[in-house]
Every structure is written in C-alpha cells, then in structure tokens.
Length: 516
Image (cartoon, rainbow, N blue to C red; front, side):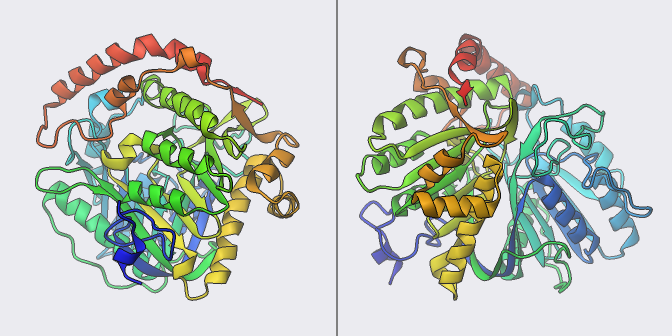
C-alpha cells in the first residue's frame, strides 16, 4: 500500500494500515535490535552510567538542561568513577584516548530561566575548562527552546525521552514522600519525579547519532564524523522489552533562517488519535494543545470511540508556566467533558497520599498498536516552536507483530499499575475483568496511597480566554527572522508576564485543584 493510499484528503490517517508514515509524521524508521523502556530516574540514570562507562569513541548529549553536579546513582560510590555527570564525563575523556564528548544544551534566555535558578553561561565556562566540549545552543527563533533529550554512546546505544541529565530528576518508582537520596547538590530535597526514557541500539541508535551531529553542526558550524561501531555499549543491567522492532524517529523544529519547520510530532499525535480503536493512554507534563483536544473531542462523541486517559502533574512548575499551561488545561478539560457523552475521558494528577508527583514523562500508547516516548508534550510549543524528538514503536511494522502488541500493552499496564499502587499483574487481571481501560482504572483507583486524582470540574466563569495562552504557549514561532538581543528578549518576556500572569495566577490556584 502506498503512502498516498494511507492518507485521506487532508493528509491524515485514513483508517487502514500503518500509522507512522516517513515524511509526514516521522523522519525515519530504523530497526532496533533491542529496545527498553526505562521508567523513572533510578532505571534511566543507572543505564546511562553503565553505557557511558562502555564508551570508546563518542558521547553525544542533547538537552533542554544539563547540570554537571547531577548524580547518577545517589547513595552509591565507586572508588574510581565519579557519580556526578560532569566529573564522570571529564574522567572518561581524560582516560580514554580517542573518546570525544559533546554536550549541547539549550542556551536559555534570561526571561525563560527566571525562577529556575540556573546559570547556563557559568555552567558552560566550568565545563569547557576540561576536555568535554560543551556548547549552549541558541539557534532558534525568539522565545523558542531546544527541548530534545538524547544521549548517544558510540552510535551503538541511544536514549531518548523526557529526561534531562539534571539535578532534580532522579527518583525511584516508589516516589516516596520522604526519600533521602532525592536531593539537590545543595542538599535541599525536591518533589517526587516521574519520567520515562526509551533505550535503543542498532540502526535506530545510529540515526539518533545523526540527529545529534546535525544539531551540533547547526549550533556551532562544526561537522562531526560518525563513529566506528562499538558492539558492547548496551547497559548490562537493562533487560530489553522489545527485540528487532522498527522505531520511528519523530521531530519538531521551528522554521529558522533557511530551515523549514518540521511538525512530525503534531502529525503523529493527530494521526494516532484518529487511528485508535479502544484506548488512548497519555502521560504529559502539560495538556494544553487545542488541536489535540479537538481531535480527542471528536473521538469522544463517537458512540464506539476509544477510552482516553491523560495523566498530568497537579500543576506546572513555575508561575509563568501555570499561566500558560494550567489555564489552557482547565479550558480543555471543560470542552472535553462536554464532548464526553459516553463517560470515556479521564484527566488525572498522579499523587502519593497527599503528596504530588511531578509527572514529566511524555508517553502515548494507542491500543496495542503504537508506543511513543519522547520529549514532546501536549502543548502548543511542542507542536512547532521548540525542537523535540520522540521515538515510536508500531506493532504492525514489526516482523512478529503479535508479540510486539503484547509488549506494548505490558508497558502501558506497567505504567498504570505504578500510578495506582498495584502490581502489573493485578492491573492486567482487572482490565480483563472490567473490559475497558477507564473501567479498570476506576475499579482500582483509591485502593492504595498511590492513586490518580481527579481535577475539579472547571467553572465556566473561571475559563481563561485563549489569547492569554497564545502569548506564552505559541503555536507558531514569534518571528522566523527576528533574533533580538538577550535584553530585548528579557524585556519582551517580562512584558508578557506582566500582562497575563498577575491577573491569572489566583484563578489558576483555584481552578486547577484536584480531588481524590
């Protein structure tokens, strides 16, 4: 079947065959001999450290953030290898002749770094004092960001998902309210944190190496050569969830200078929603993209449409993001509840007792057909303003499709079991008994301290006009050719915040509360 036959008149999913289509909703589809879902920081940071210790030729890191003092295995020590990521990279580069290390992090503008207590310029100076080559990337339109989160070792193993190598990301799957290892380098504790990364090897890893090299070239003007293969870079304690699966690489990039925009992430979201038969499961830091809400609403109006379950954090991390994202979520919740004539929509906040869990993951599971993990949130910025990179596994494209379908369901059930405080076996059995995703969640929710809390129903008089959110969560870049000075960006952002923020923060805190 041709690509043209797969698409309807609007270029979307036509209801037959494959969801992923290179050139439309993904960049490339490459095979991974092994792929593994790494849930929460203990799993990812352990796997990342083990892969880094096997590096022989190259280490490439892309991040929205990078904190050289972030610990990979807090509470553990090694007499030779440092646990702080910056010191570990420097030690590897010093000791292994021929090993190149490139770290490319977003060059945060002063305005968008407000409230984050980060000094990327000082960090760059510290890192560039050694052999690690660290650069800050500002090659994007004004008020955009580089949000891709990728680690590639020797073009042999790569990680892509929601995790930055940052100081407040590590946590266990228990997400305990009190966890002594969950501390900033200053010793200050931080909130429980949930995130997901996908590890891949083979051609899929090499393709992510290509992506990282192109990002470095665009940021610095310097081309990097592909590296020789390393057959032994897979982290030894990481058990693959998948073998020999095709992996789609899905991107967002804004139009910038002579580069065209890329909106693969948005296209795959919309095509996946259109393709769903029984269920759509989403984890996202934000839920603030009206086009996605409209697509979901259309499916909810169908008599036999899919269940749709979205897991968010209770609130966005900063006051500015609360203005931009939480108010949009409130409005979307209102609209989706109106469309949900058959009781198939749920929007939850993950909690442990009375303690919030910061949901930072970006996951989408469609039926038993598609698993997607990456950096793209369900907000406007991720559709066409910020750079993003997701990976997707589609069962129908795998040689053993039935096996991969079961593995995709296992990943989804494992995530939901974690949020509900039950075992994956218990959740799977309940799902079989209840017959639908929403019914299974409703049956188990509240039986443990770990639960999925409902948001209060939004009041119409608290809904915020869409133009407020368009200022802070734009669907298109502010200006394709405009690149003002840092002071100019700072003043423009301060004006936006003054215009929208002060009048709305009180509303956010009232309308975004959740109920158990």
